[in-house]
Image 1 (cartoon, rainbow, N blue to C red):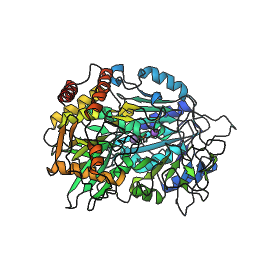
Image 2: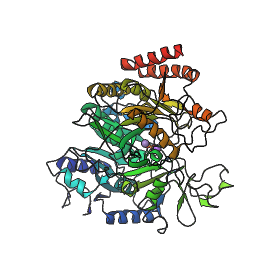
Image 3: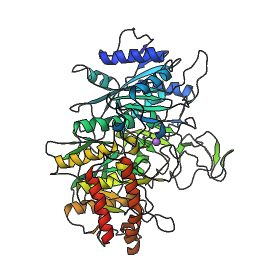
Image 4: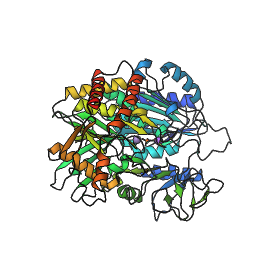
Amino acid sequence: MTTLVRPPLVTAPLPTTHSRLLAWVREVAELTRPAAIRWCDGSAAEWEELTGELVRAGTLIRLNPAVKPNSFYTRTDPTDVARVEDRTFICSRDEADSGPTNNWVAPEEMKATMTELYRGSMRGRTMYVLPFCMGPLDADQPMFGVEITDSAYVAISMGIMTRMGSDVLAAMSAGGDAPFVPCLHSVGHPLEPGEPDLPWPCNETKYISHFPEERMIWSYGSGYGGNSLLGKKCYSLRIASAIARDEGWLAEHMLILKLTSPAGKTYHLVAAFPSACGKTNLAMLEPTIPGWQVETLGDDIAWMRFGSDGRLYAVNPEYGFFGVAPGTGWHTNPNAMRTIERGNSLFTNVALTNDGDVWWEGQTPRPPSQLTDWMGRYWTPDQGPAGGTPREPAAHPNSRFCTPIKQCPILSEDFDSPTGVPIDAILFGGRRATTVPLVAEARDWAHGVFLGATLSSETTAAATGKVGVVRRDPMAMLPFLGYNVADYFSHWLELGKQHSGRLPQIFYVNWFRKKADGTFLWPGFGENGRVLKWAIERMEGTADAVDTPVGLVPAAGSLDVAGLHLTPAEVEAAVAFDADEWRTEVPLIEEWFDLIGERIPTELLTELDLLKSRLDED
Ligand code: PEP
Ligand code: MN
Ligand code: NA
């Protein structure tokens, strides 16, 4: 049931008796002064109504129902296109707890600053109350959140990305008032009486703030996904990583997949890669090698807890995919294409075709002869956008599709399992043109943690800032850690000691190594199934490896390259350990460890010493 009330929040009937929630909603309404309050129920009727309003407001364009049923297109403000890492804050009480890698402001100071920004910030707008649950609602301890936002785009996106609505609200007070993470979001663009709205309201001033001790999130000024869909990066990674530290589990930036061998044996893998490095593609892989099959459980976030049998189990807290569109096509990720073809999806900052469909670079080998680009300009393959330059892409490099996970044709039947799936292997990977071999197996847990802790990648368009710069991105969590990075490494090592019996095997991968001529050494995509096969065979004891200072790399002939058009020398170049490249890498790792400072666990310093001494022998 939809409930619209005028503030102050006295109009009955209220849809919940949850007293902390009611008090918080009232407090936010009094501060932000919305014109109306809407408790979202997550129904199809509500989706109809909100998308209809957004179409009338000029925020959404309805796509051609013959090709994308019940789907919509939006262009953001051109300055609001990605996560803003320099405006993202971990406001722990003690600065040291946010660590050297996060921006920090004292919680009371941040609250004072943002309270003034929020004062009256929802004037002239509807305030949406979104009750959501990260992970299954029938989990032992369902992980509730409530987002308050003045963006209808956020409301419908959260409806795709999370379990959201009346069922969640009812569950929140079923057994007494349940705890929840309050997530406050405002685009920061109040409307004066009679003032026309913008298609994409936002504010130049942006804050994405996290209060890890209070388990609370305040976001202001941006409508873009990672900054505004607060159940995703803010809750499920930054706040959840702090909860996981306190409770002995892991909240990680990882895809989850199920792999079945030709013999019918099943395995589950998680894999951490930085944003826009192919997590969604790997999660939905169609292996080229006969008899192997992949099913998907998640493409971005894994919550992992140890079961009573001592094994590590993973759950995907999300309910949709918020994927990078460019590079997603029938040849690279047919299962993502099939997922969005079923409709019920939102597309942000891609290009629009003349017949009301969406297009982006890499969707088809050649672009259509004319398009409307992500800034609304007439665009042709030869000229680029009108008034722009010929090489400007039609879709923004960080343009996105937002689509229900239940539409994925290879979704594993265990997706809704409240306890998750047992994990056999963990992959860490980045985007490196040199140095890092195609695959290396860690010698043990501590060595695997070292490989994850020193992970590096070339930056992408997923965050604002320069693209293509190599930076350390520990466990691909650099932008998503809710606490001190050294403590995070200690937590990983500690869990390894506590659960030493049946730990997953750790592998280090790099699909992006290049030849001298700048082309990729490894074909990637469906061929990455060959690397997964090698990893499985290592665990089964049937594939040979060569011990190198960085780990165990495939011995000649052990990687299945049957049918691949690669020479043995090319395969060798992809998997090779190059001592000179690693001698160049060591000072970068030392620099990174120096930045982390004194809290760094000694086990990692020992691993670094081991790497150096093995390089000296080499
Ligand atoms: C986002 O930035 O909105 C997001 C989902 O994160 P990522 O960059 O990891 O895709
Ligand atoms: Mn991500
Ligand atoms: Na992003």
